[in-house]
Length: 109
Image (cartoon, rainbow, N blue to C red; front, side, top):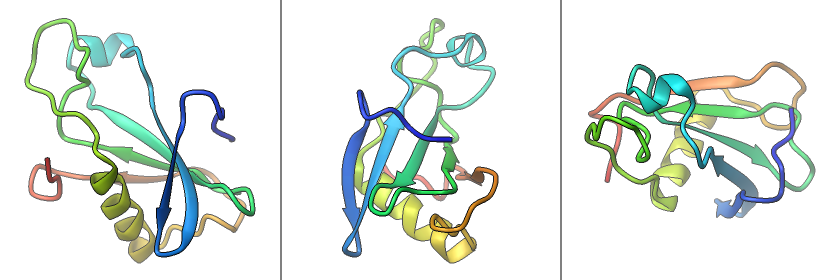
């Protein structure tokens, strides 16, 4: 799975370049705040073989019922990448997407 370059944002964490993407429009479940906000991360050079999917505890900012939500900041993305690497994510090894779920205590505004 590869992220599109359009709409994704670059970030450098510990000297390694990554690209991250938050879906602009919420899915139906995210719009109703049934499922949390997620974003995807992949390594850019060399291209990533395994994508990181980060599930946050907050709702998507564009949800339809005005549930409390917070934007995804680059500093939070960097922390999530470091935590995923510590938990065993190997972006340069082929495999299925690695999912990291962050609870309220793990998230920072």
